[in-house]
Length: 313
Image (cartoon, rainbow, N blue to C red):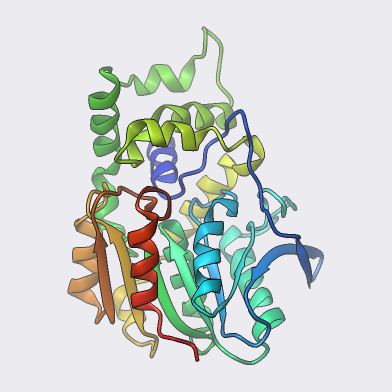
């Protein structure tokens, strides 16, 4: 189970500790959330419709979504990103259910920026699940859902993900993965959960890029503060205990768009599941990318985002 959670975490986020950490490039703003002061980052005009971008993981930083945020601002939206509580800039202690804390955090940011108006949610991978969980609690506060390489909310496609990851990495590196040995040992000693997660990610992240070397270089931008193995495991556990089902989603009067990569390891199963169970507004499938289209095919991704989001003017 630990192996599966960590492998899914890698697919659902694209973050990895590395040697040359990048970070948010815009100044942090703050809003109060009970006992927490939450940092967030904003681009776009003051009176523009609000978009909140939700990153992958769970338990990963979100600064790598700045290209998505920048494109949204160019399209005329007021776009916000933030690390979720327990991670990166918002590394406060999460005492209760992480999903409950994160839903409250998203709602706090929406109130801070949009007042009583609904916001658009853009969710990447696990972030799509976070968008579904939030919308279940606050359906009237969501104007639109835009899902980037989303995870199937009923998780049917996740059942064989670990095997697909192993196979892709083995093809690229010419080696097989000894899961029990990798978990138990590092030069003969026991491996802490965080160290194990770093080890898994460093070895596997490049397989989520069509260009393996591009993925390896991308991996060098992240460090330990970008990832919480504990919150990753707890977040997935909390979602499994109370998932969002398609019957619930169909009750919402919220348009849903999807942008996905044709070569993604979860394609076409996730998209097939969404299409079979929901009435999607628009679907854009991009070629030449696996899981991070804003890095792999930025021009095509920018065009797709402009197609699925209506002109706010």
